Amino acid sequence: MKLSHLKSILANLPDVNFKLQNGTAVPQHFHITEVGEVTKNFIDCGGVVRKESYVSLQLWNADDFNHRLKPTKLLDIIAKSESVLGIGDRQVEVEYQSDTIGRYDLDFDGTGFILVNKQTACLALDQCGVEKPKVRLSSLKVSSGDSCCDPSSNCCN
Image (cartoon, rainbow, N blue to C red; front, side, top):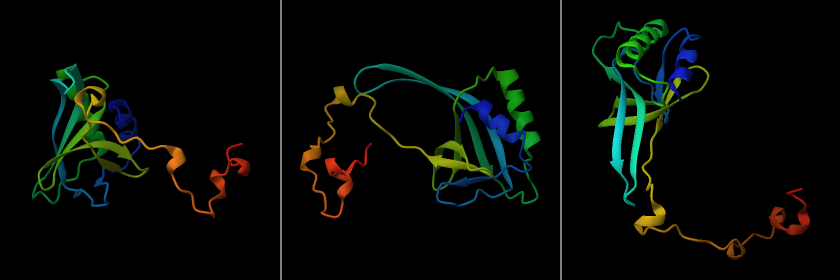
């Protein structure tokens, strides 16, 4: 989710709620302790120089059980970050403490924000020597009840 999308959602919400992909809710008394733009300069395993930038939000739980961050306050924090730091309209990544500091992509389910698990990946599969297994489609066995794969079934028309 880009920062502009996050702001447009916040403008229409009564409350700010986050939860992990597994359904575990981030306690409602969370704080936003950082808003920033992070730039990562790196070389992948194929030797290609890369640069990524994203907006980072850091969520933190305190023992301040009476605290509730309202959408207007979060929008104010984002606006100040944009004006003071020159943050651009980039993808948003959320840092949140679970067993360790986790980094998550951000999604919205219509009522609250979902912290989406991030995955690592090789960016230079064609150069690093790791190959994906190749499978011939003709070698896949189809059970006799699956007529959809039969060319005469017209399932793809």
